[in-house]
Length: 250
Length: 175
Image: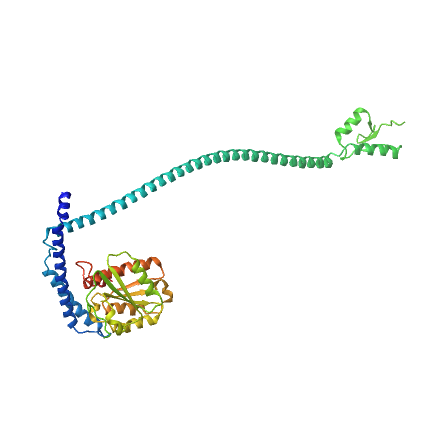
């Protein structure tokens, strides 16, 4: 088919005929144009006043549009030429144009596809990287969690220890307090036997003729008993409430 | 003859002519350069004027103008007045889709010294689209250039099935 068309176009004589025919057509169209032009020149000029520009323009437009509409309605599709050579040439031209357009389209689509593929690859790489990052982050998170647990255990132990130490300290101070109170109480209610001894010795030394001492509340009764049993002190032969120190020095 | 008329001359093959009217420093120049850098399959010819009317002595050298863009700088309150005065020198048939107002400097609304309601009103009264852009920003300058180029293509009749009036009616009825 293509070869057949080539043959037709290759026919030089017929092409020259076609060319002349076309030129003739162009000439007649140009003549028509000149006639129209001359008619147009006969029309006077008409400028617009600012005040009524809109109205007069709209009127003109209505006229022009209705004329145009009328023209379109009465227009018949015109054949470009009856000459087969011209038609073949025109057809070929149109086909070539279409082919060019399609090729351009194809190359555009291909380049777009390539770009999209590259985009996809890049996105996939990015996804992989992101997944790796997520893995690394989860690992770190787990490590940190373990550390946190350890630390919290340690600190719990420490806190326990501290509490124990505190309690111990409290106990110590309490013990001290208690001891203090106890010694005060003892001092108050059960004075040391040294006091009785001292009184006995000083009575014996100061008044050797009257060494007896009267037992009062300040003397600790068990101690007096001990002194009497051991024979360190002696009771007055007539008054049980009075005692004296044994005269060791005589 | 000071009034600009559409279709007053025969068109040139595969070319479109744009007229930029604006007095804001080198912005029209910059915009024209940006438009010329855009890819297109027809020749674009851009004429720049600070105001209308155009000098009549060079009228015979000037090609047919397919579209006029009036530039209004919101930082310059004289620009609106300039555009309003220039509109008096344009034929009414130009407003059937071949005129557009371009408000520039909208990135600096705090420096606005033009009544924006007046600009909207202007677009409404003259049945023409009002575009907004900031020419100092490369991105918006390029997109504005693309829009204007597309409109120019339609105005010059290079889009089969779409006339300037039809496109303009679409644009203004949705704005």
